Length: 193
Image 1 (cartoon, rainbow, N blue to C red):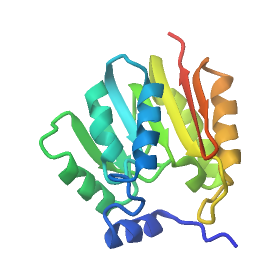
Image 2: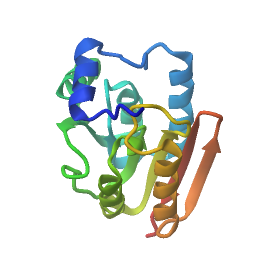
Image 3: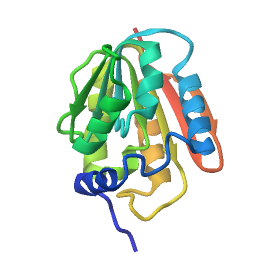
């Protein structure tokens, strides 16, 4: 039986534990971040956007690739942890956002959507994808990293969410990178100039 998690559920998770998935120390999470950063490419971006920044572990690393980085999350507690973790990094702006409603306005040269799409209701996912494309600058890159195995608190089966995003973006932007493991998939698309 599904126990779908919503914004309040994420808030409760981060209130109980500032690192509920062991992002900081788990070898799997460290490796997954490395795969994500490689999919971002070796260029330096002007404006970046990270969706669902959680406690800021990935944010810290993405900031090295962006002149300015906006990091958003639905959990105020997660954002506070992320701010503390990234204190002294002036190039990062943290914002509370319930997606797709609060999608930041672009243009962004890099957008990272990691482990968020399957937590959105199907109609919210359908609304978010064109907003992501609209916020992506010409020549910009969007990177998706998501689990592909089912789990109980997802609103959409992970494989379905991944397929929907990739299908939508493949119609409007060339696929640049794909990496599939037994547990997660990474895909990067670049918007034409």
